Every structure is written in structure tokens, then in C-alpha cells.
Image (tube, rainbow, N blue to C red):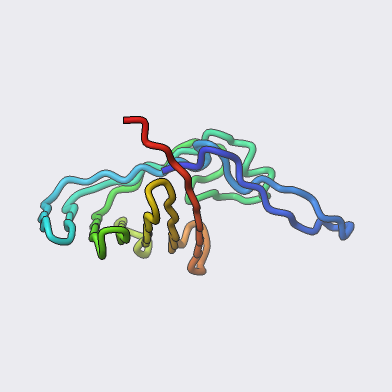
Length: 168
């Protein structure tokens, strides 16, 4: 996964002024998790995949991010490097359920544990609602924990409203 657009935060500099500072950008970071293992598919609710052997590749396209943030490591990648390849085990649980004819719930939980660090956790919870013929809305909550990024749980909430016209 990666951002498409740059992400900026407003911070206070040493003079007390508000300045815009880049936090992440396109392929900065790009995180790819892969594994080989077993999977169970349950058509009524979703699937479970357990990776007996797996890896996680973290790629940093915009190397200047280390200087901008004044950090020695960014998403676990040390200064002067562009990639970090970790070996470990993984588990993916996906729940995909139509609650009603207009309301759908999707939940995805990804766990990755390399041989040294604590487990990385990503949970995405999405409620999609279609109302009328052309309108839709969604509420997505994403929870992240990765010690290399922050020792605290990170939470994103995204609300979307859409309008669409079916051509055929």
C-alpha cells in the first residue's frame, strides 16, 4: 500500500511559526506484504489466510523525508537506505458481509510478525451504504500499530459521499 498524494502536517517551528511539513508521499513509504501458507474461504462471511512464511518490503522513494522529519529511521528503513526487507509470518482475516440490500460491511485485519520486532497490526473497517439509485456513502476506520512508526496506536477515519450515474 502507498499514498497517491503527499501528506503534510502543520507544525510549530523553533520561532513559533506554523510551517507545513511533509509526512509521507507517493511510494514514501510503499509497504508490500507477501506470504505463502494456507487459506480458508467461507462464502457466507469471508476468508482467513495464514502465512507460514512471509515477508514485508518497505520502499522509500523520496529519500529527503529523513532530513525533513529529522529522523534516523522512517518506517523502519534506516537513513541512507531505500528499502527494508523483513522476514516473518503473517495472517489476514477478511470479513465481507451484506448486512441489508443497501448496507455492506467489510473488515480486514492484517498481522505481520518478523523474527525480532513486535507484531504489526492493520485493521480496516468499512461500512458502505447505497441510498437511492445514484447516491452512496461510506465510513472507514483504519487502525495501525507498527513500532517502527510510532509506539502508539494510530487511527484514521474517512467519510465519503458519492453520486454516480449508470451508463449501461
